[in-house]
Image 1 (tube, one colour):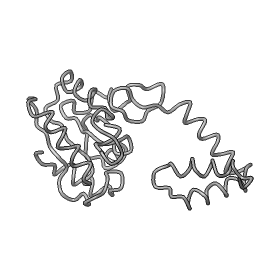
Image 2 (cartoon, helix red, strand yellow; image 1 turned 30 degrees about the vertical axis):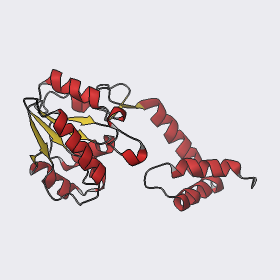
Image 3 (cartoon, helix red, strand yellow; image 1 turned 60 degrees about the vertical axis):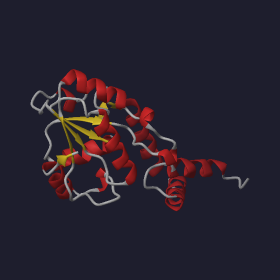
Length: 200
């Protein structure tokens, strides 16, 4: 024991965040410890507010506030109700919305098939996806997943599930960098990929 177990625990918690390595987590933890009345207080307040107010939409899985559930993207009658864009997680919805190129509905899977991490179809929101497809009568399902091996496997699995359904299944067009995710693409590339989608 080094006497700084609380700091070690904070570092470990920060390191669990996506894109944060161990060294970055340590630097963040040290900074928060050095400035408890500034950065730490602001972070605590922001975390409390987010915990109290931010939710996952019960329909699409996107981020929303507690008062708007289903979210505004799901309830907006001006959006194209015949097209459903399937993404990995809520950050992908935000990335696609920033492009302004898609006006349909969304469904976040909250994961992908990844045997290496012990994650399979049962760990994703596939049941609710199939229910929505049956109930909401979509004409097209866009599989807006990444281009890494796990995302490709997930897209193939969903395409197979939807084979007998009376709808078109498409994928994003080229322009998405290989081995990358939706949230890491710039708006122009992502917009082109949505507009130039292809049959799956």
